[in-house]
Image (cartoon, rainbow, N blue to C red):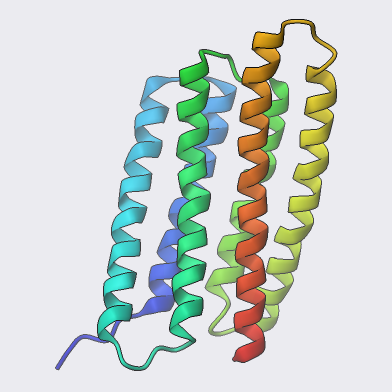
Length: 196
């Protein structure tokens, strides 16, 4: 008999790796080191493997615990959040800038957001109310990160070095978009809960 695919466990694994990636991103923002950059790359590769397993499972499973499209889209957005953690570090290295206090603050908020995403996803199956509450918290964090980003922009534009302004603005935009994707992922999760 074919082994039953545990889609919820695969989503949980994606979320755990997302939290690890955000923790590593925070550590990098506080003290940039090549080893942390390599760690994020490794985490991203492991998450890609889990996503491939999930997609293969969807392709060969007739009945899924929740709508297969919802599973696919939620997994894709979790993957995108983690990808942004990696590309944020890549851009910091590419632009040859030092993470500042605003980047530390925003990445710390993204880490808290990732922890709530993990709690939301891990409770979909067994405690839907907790999943809903956690998803709503994530959406509140998106608003908080938006405000933090606007404040960072305001400070940045007080400067006169346009080259530096452009580089940091691009990083802020990238980090803010990470929060937007997380918010969208929780919209999918809330839709899933309504259908259950």
